[in-house]
Image 1 (cartoon, helix red, strand yellow):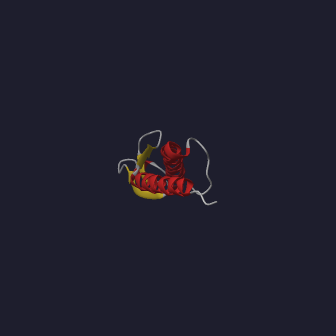
Image 2 (image 1 turned 60 degrees about the vertical axis):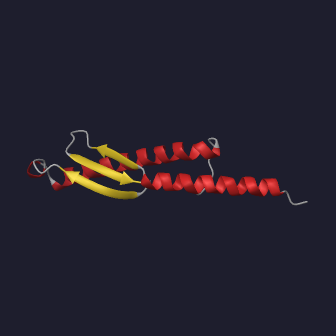
Image 3 (image 1 turned 180 degrees about the vertical axis):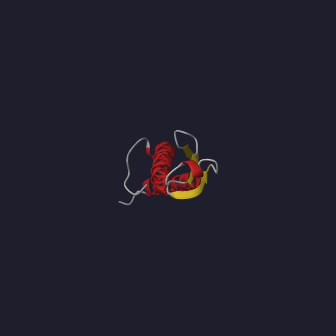
Length: 101
């Protein structure tokens, strides 16, 4: 027999998850290089909103060092964004890791 209560619960859960995904999309995570010369802002879990490089830093650094610092800051911002996203999603999933969320 088809259980309407279970269907309603599933619909309610989907609404909550969609609301949380919207919340995650608006989330902003900021990371800086150790020396503070590079600042990265990631929106949601994967969209880079901005990259700020201190103008005084540019004449002092090689392209290779700038690239290394930029990669480190981006990776840190993405890692923190993912942590924040998982924390928000655990509100609905109770800590379960559901693929695709």
